[in-house]
View 1: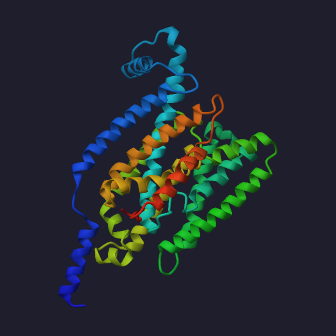
View 2 (view 1 turned 135 degrees about the vertical axis):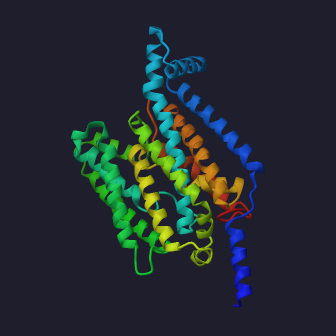
View 3 (view 1 turned 120 degrees about the vertical axis):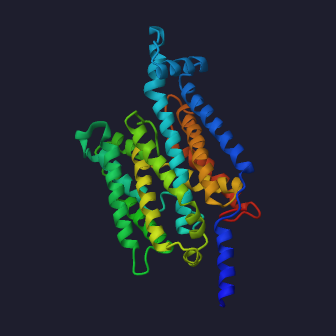
Length: 365
């Protein structure tokens, strides 16, 4: 290839990796999602097994923010709002935003339309630690934090094992990463199943299964700021590297042509995605389909440019999970459904319809 031809090819790749800005529709969509998220949070606080008037919710929230006085007659609703529903709704929004964001990054990292935050085996590894807490009682001295700590530590161990197994002489290639993560996930799931099978009593097995399907029932004010800070840092990291994600999604050779070290950048993506997934799984369990479905929906709305996708995906994921969690705690009240069951019920038919949509391909329309 001549130098002029190579220059023309490189210029074409740069235009593909850095597509023209189309902020005309992006800004209204962002504003609309922000408004929808605010309304979703208020609805999540007001609605539940015990419905609360919106005016009372706003009055109590205003008093809590401004330091006002709550009448004794509203002590019950005050505790429901500030101690139970508000941290749960906020954590749901944070987890939804994080899962949708990681889903975007992982799909670009491994160039696989079926990739999600759990394909790396991190979720299955975290499940081993969480199940060991509920069935064997390890880390009992940590009290309420035992499950989250054990899940996060086992997620770190799973991350290290997947990385060591997938990192060969040719580096951390997409195929090796997907195959290794999938194989490790089966192994971790087998250990989890054995722990549940050997549980000393049925309630421990039921608690472990409920966590494995995802739940925000354990949300508290201690977990909200930690998860929130980690998710914000993760979103910021991916947003800064949106152009690199555009290049990587076109293949390693194209990325190298555009000056992106594909193997090194994939290692970074793997480390950040694994850490973020570990934190999210530790506070909410394994909530499936959010990181798989939302990136495709967002690409249908704004195209494949990761700068636009990463502006919309966190907001869409936050709104989605807040409403799913609301359904999980109201449809079978006073019992609570695992969130993962509802995300699968919603996600499977939608994803099948999406795949059958004429003209749809991974990364755009």
